[in-house]
Each structure stands twice: as structure tokens, then as C-alpha cells.
Length: 124
View (spheres, one colour):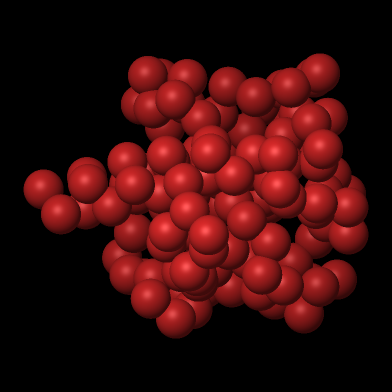
């Protein structure tokens, strides 16, 4: 039950923070190897706890992915604004390693997941 509440808290925080995140350094085509490894941590933001990458950039989850049992649903125009976090993630501070994983996208890329939900950046 605690994991479900945490997931919804992270989702709510991530969606509430949409307007304040500038993720221009990462996005489509950038790989964790180019960035020195993919580490997902929990950080404290103005909105509460949220997942971040190794550079402190906020990570997001989509309700449509949850409705599709963790299958990525953001492609084409959606993926231009919400690029997938690709690669095999490692657990950083505050993150349960057992909740991290990957899911295969339609193009064959591996998208990082947390609690079985795909993770995204927001380029806004």
C-alpha cells in the first residue's frame, strides 16, 4: 500500500511541476552512457518528493501508461514534448532498487521504469 501511495505522490508531484522543469540537456538521442550512467534518485522539490535523474532533472509518469499496465503510450508528437528516459537505471538516494526496471518501446529501445511505470522527461 505504501508503494502505491508513493507512486501516486510522485505522479501528482511530477504533473504539478510540469511548468517549472527545463530539461533541454537530455532528451531523445541522449543515452545514459553519454551522460555517465543513469541513476534515479528521490529529491525534495517545492511540491514534495519527486524522482530525478543523475543531473537532478525531474522525471514524470503518465496516467495513460498506468491504464495500459505499464506499456509506454507516448510516441510521435507526445514524445517530442515528453521524451522517454532510455536505459537501464541504477538506484540512487531514496529509491528502492526493486522498483526500478525497463520496458521495451515499439522502436526496440529500453525505457526506464519505476514501479512498473515508464519514466519521461518534459521538454517545455
